[in-house]
Image 1 (cartoon, rainbow, N blue to C red):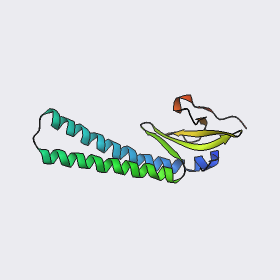
Image 2: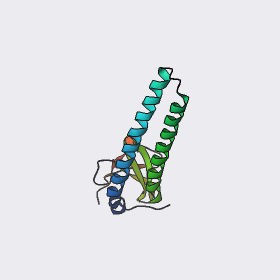
Image 3: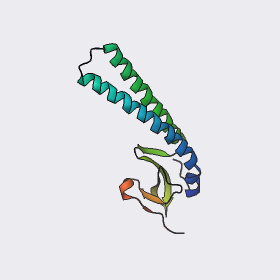
Image 4: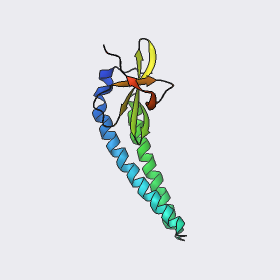
Length: 128
């Protein structure tokens, strides 16, 4: 497993921002398609072909999201969420395995959490 320095993780932030810009757009499109499909079902729409097309489009958009998230994993980081957009980076602090954590909108890596913890348990990085 690759371990990131804070500088290495921060160097990926611009790429992560670009990735999540695309992910957010795909998720929004999928949510609109899903809402339309629910409306069709609630209205007892009998257009089976239209419903199947909508389901196929949602699956296509979901695969697109997976492809974008895989780009993060290809860098050695771990995508943890889309809403909010979260990424963890394997790291060591004093020999202990932890994750540096980043949330969309943050311009620096300033927090970490244990490998068995989540975003809610994150703590500030120790001062050097």
